[in-house]
Length: 98
Image 1 (cartoon, helix red, strand yellow):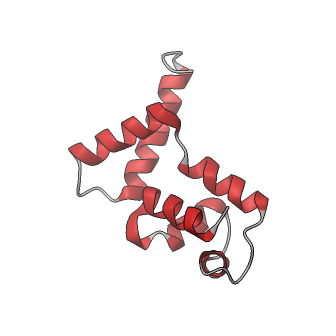
Image 2 (cartoon, helix red, strand yellow):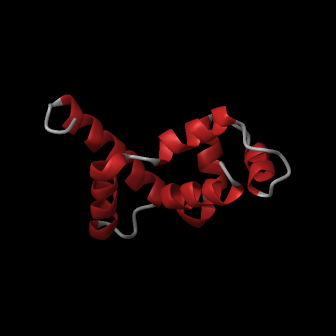
């Protein structure tokens, strides 16, 4: 993962204030995320996998997240992402989505 991919994933899920919530979501300090963002340290594959897994909801989840954002534009991006994750889990659990 490159710093640009890290930034894109963080902004996709959390918007412009993505560093702290992403750090909390993946279990790393905000300082480490800063090091990765600015290329001070190489992003380990373990971190990259965790960030990608957190940000990528797949096509159905992405559609759900964008629908939530359209209906509730004032909702923080991170909250919209959490709702989309739960909806996707519910759809998958019910067998409606694989």
